[in-house]
Structure formats: C-alpha cells, structure tokens
Length: 318
Image 1 (cartoon, helix red, strand yellow):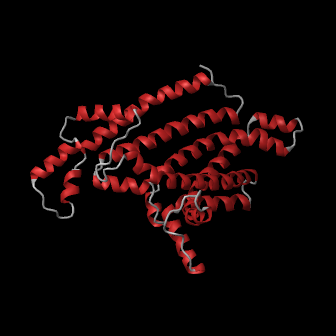
Image 2 (cartoon, one colour):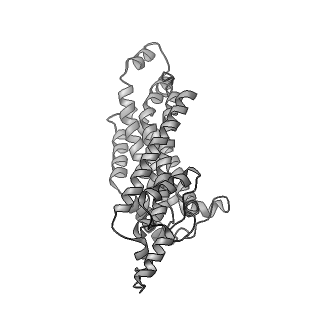
Image 3 (cartoon, helix red, strand yellow):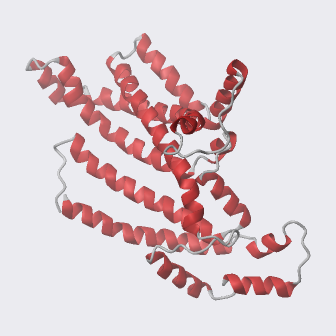
C-alpha cells in the first residue's frame, strides 16, 4: 500500500507539469491583453509608451520561455506569483474565496451521500415498484434541472412563503455557525440535488448488477440474513463505482459553481474564474487551474485507496 501510494504521488508530478505547460502557453495565444484592458478598458486615454512600461513592469515583454521557467521555479516554492489585476498574491486571492467554495462542496457532498445511498438501495431492492418509480422520477428531475435554476426556485420560495432571503455577506462557520448555515445551506441543497441524483442512479444500477452475482446467491443459500447479505456483501461492492462519481463530482464543485454562485451572490472560486478570464489575468488563472488539477490528483488517489477499504479483495502491491 505504501509503495503504491508513493508511486501514485510521484506520477502526479508529470501530470501537474503537463497541466502547467498547457495552461501557460494556451493562455498566451488567447486574444486580449491585460494591460490594454486595465489601462484602456473604461475608455482611459494612455499613451503607448505607458502601456509598454506597464508590460515591462509585469514582465510580459520577456520571452515566453523565460516567463515559464521563472513561474515553474516559483511554483516549486509554492509561490504562484502576484495577480496582474489586483497586484495581490495569487494565494491570497484564492484563499479568501476557497473557504466558501470548499464548504459548499463539502455540504453538498454530505447531503448527496446521505440521501443517495438509501434512495439507490431502496430503488434496487424494490425494483419496478412504486418506490423504484418514485426514485427514478426524483433522480431524473435532479439530472434534468440545472442547479442554478433550482437555486432560483429556492430563493423565490423563501421570498414568497417566508418573506426572507439568505444573508448576503459571507460569515465563516467558526465565527457564526448559524449565520453561515443560513447562507450556504441553500446553494448546497441546490447543488446537492443533482449530485444526489447522479450518485443514486449509479448505486441503483450497480446494486442491481451485484445482486445477480454468484456469491450473493451463495450467501443466501447458506442462510445468511438478508440484511447482512445486502449491507456486507452487495452494498459494499456496489459502492465502488459510486465512490468514483462522488469524488469526481466533489472536485468539480470546487471550481464549477459559476452560475450557482451568481444566483446566491457568493464570491467563490467560480466567480473568481470568471473575473480573471474576463481580465486576462494570466497568473491568477494559472494558479486556479493548478489548484483544481491538484485537487483532482489528490481526490483520485484517495478514491483508489478507498477501494481497498470497501472491497477487501483489492490489494495494492507493486
């Protein structure tokens, strides 16, 4: 297990390097200049000499190879540079928004898992009954309804029936848990509904397949209690593909809630992505892409290691 983990961590290095190369050079071929947007975006009148001096100050006049080499060296020191727009450290810009996005992702994951496992299990055990049909309707609705639209329905319902809207200002959970949950529970529900639908359908299909396996029939023939057959033998194996979906969806939520954050007026990573792209803030975009890539690598590693927990037959050797 330890050797397998070390090998996977070492393989993450070329993966992240490839992501760094792609994001750095692809951003340089995208039309637009941050200096032009920054100095002339609002109709400002500046000379070309001023623009060239600003480009020199930001280091944009140097060869791309030199810029890339300097960025990679700094990134190895966990220094992602300074935002070209706000001129604050990239880590600071990300950190003040990551807490919000990460909490919404964790809350949505908890909601989805707590609902999806019983829903998917009940749908598989009571196949082609009204319970199965009800779960199918709910999950198809979750897959069909965009999260931001469901969030708008939640906001309208709160305003129409209770004449109340969530707080606008973000309050960390360690400062005021009640105010924090009043604001973030609703986007977590909006996102968690779709999340739950994906996981529940995966569990249902996997459990139906597992229940037809020979070892399930053998366990039943030996007189094992049905509850133990389901929980110990069937459900643990059926959860393996669901774990993969849970991990990938969680990582997606870190930076993929652009429109949902707009609906609930949340200043998270998704909003920061939109702002940095519209401003051509290269260093900030690069930092966020590397952050999401690192999340994907870490979550995939955690998923692989969890496989051995749920299925004892899996052993990681060389």
